[in-house]
Amino acid sequence: MTPPLLQVPHTSRTAGAADLVTQYWPVLLPVALGFAAVYLLLPRARRYPPLWGAAAAGLALAAAGSLLIRHETDLAESILFYIFAGLAISFGGLMICQRNPVHAALSFAMVVLSTCGLFLLQAAPFLMAATIIIYAGAIVVTFLFVIMLAQQAGLSSADQRSHEPFLATVAGFILLASLLCVLQKSYTSLDHFVERAERAAQASTVAEWQAILGKDESFFTEFREAVRPDRHPRRQDANDPTVVARTNLKNALENAATTWSALTPGEDGKAGQFGPDTVTTFKGQLEKVVEKAHSLRQMQGSLQPAENLPLSTASGTPPNKPAAIVDGKPVERLPAGNAAGLGRALFTDYLLAVELAGTLLLVATIGAIAIAGRRPEGLR
Amino acid sequence: MTPATLQNYLIVGAVLFVLGMIGFLCRRNMILMFLSAEMMLQGVAINLVSFAHYRGNLQGQVFVLFMLTVAACEAAIALALVLILYKSRKTLDVSVWQDLREPDLEPVEDEEPLPPPPPQERLPRLPPAAPAPPQPQEPSHV
Image (cartoon, rainbow over the protein chains, first blue to last red):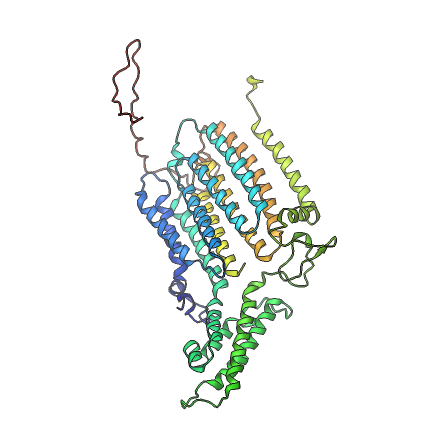
């Protein structure tokens, strides 16, 4: 099935608002529902029925969940991701919509705990422990103490009203919509083509290929347009790994397109002249296209460190390099060496920053005591 | 970790950040405003950790550790300030501090009155030097 996101040709640079909506409606739908939910649920003097907001929030979560794409990951990880992400987002929404500040602080503790689950899924066990101890253990408890000290009279009128709820929600959700559209555009623009090329590489007869790729060269033309190396004019360095990957993929596509034009019937409807070698060659070329596309998708946006970048090995090993040898032993890859690697990185690469952070903590302690420690003269 | 997986974590981080931003902009309780700022930090932390996982090294995680430090400092200072502000005006509402606004801005006033508080249920009170008044007892199943 073709995602509606990708049916619009890439040439429509000056798309208007209507085009934007048709192009990105799978992203904009949960954003609009979330907008409605947060706007309806924010505290105000005359409240809307909370059931409407809760229904909108549930729909938004379901729409956003169906939007997320899971590729080649095992089922347990997907389920855990959905649980933790859903908990984090729903308790985050609950936190800003709660009238009672104590309940809001407890919801924030739940947000922190779900975030820690996400950290654990991303191979960061030390950070998970540190975040639970510092946030849930120290910061939230301090907040609760302050609420207890400051709000002994019960709910104040400040908690039952919000400040410009409409404008604040509009601003937040416009930011969210633009972030999600950019993410969608940069991370899923290749998936559709790659999936078709994979299916084509599985097939082995001209009829099957025509069913998948169409009867003309449009698949190759559009794919080539999507990966054109000069689409990012700022990155013209020929040694850049992304540019190299794009150029490789473009060359593979051009080879395959040439062979494909020999396989397809011409203008007069007659099949071109080809032998069994051509079919084999085309299959090989398609496999090459799939391989190059996978490698490009792995490094899209040049997020992987360059091969020749002088990174220290203390921060773990980049995935495109063999494991470095320190003291005769290879550096452990994530996550087994997480705590050890963090310690090594902190005290080699980031030693100055650690000292500065310690100084900052000391200054903050003294400052907090100096600010809050004043007592009336009579008590001394 | 594939780019699609990375994208999922980035989406969660963006949603947490935006929810925190909305909370910071429209809540009027000072403590809730600081909690919302902390939630924005959580969204950023998710982004950094997922990039660290995606690139296969620890730079993002080290950055999150420093963020934790700064967040702890920020919470200490902010709560001390909140206590000072509370002591001087006896409320946590930020809008009582709106006399610090720019001179050409209109003051914000609450238009709609709050609904009356729900009537409090009267608790039974023991009369002095008398037996307890009869109260409906639920049947016990122990």
